[in-house]
Length: 258
Image 1 (tube, rainbow, N blue to C red):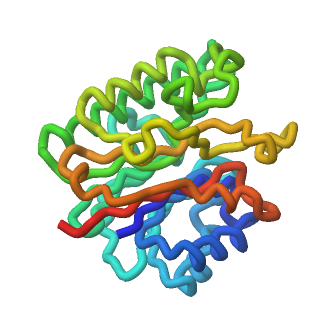
Image 2 (image 1 turned 60 degrees about the vertical axis):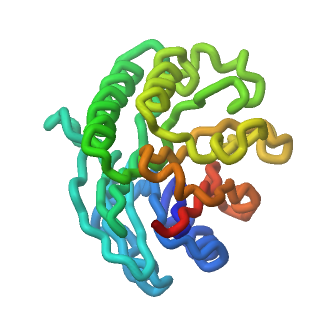
């Protein structure tokens, strides 16, 4: 089973890119972030024609998350991260597919640091930690997948010294990420490629993609029960080079059958 995450950075404006990648890569499950479309503007007809069912939570102008699945039932669990009934941002959607809990999310950016946006990011991450711990405690097969807006370590960013006070790389968020790993979550891509330079995002400015001046923001974390099923994975970096592509590239893994 091939599972992928892709921050599309505007699903309607980049729909041809998404459909082309779906056709070429043939993932079984796809988690999308940053739809930048209200609920009624999600292109469900085109997604269905590509062979996928979908659940989604849109939001006008920004945010928005979706889970797509091919030839698999999607059982929706919830459309918001528990812990704050006043949070109206569309950043989290959770479902069960093939007896695996799929948590697709788009962590707040948090910039500028310091400030209210960074405080919101830390509070959001705490809620995610609490929810993820429930899966560990219940010994469920689960996947935390999406745009974490966290650069975990120095090897995950081009020239890390320039990012010390950026909300993506602040010590507080890196500590939160390490805490997930300490609790048992497996960083699938780092598990497969412990020594390689791997990025998932390249800015549109300063020819960042051409220079490979990137950062690794998009992650797929597996609960302990899934570690033995991890077969392969990678980043479809070439998609970032397509015309009118997102500034993120798709990230994917393959799981063996039980």
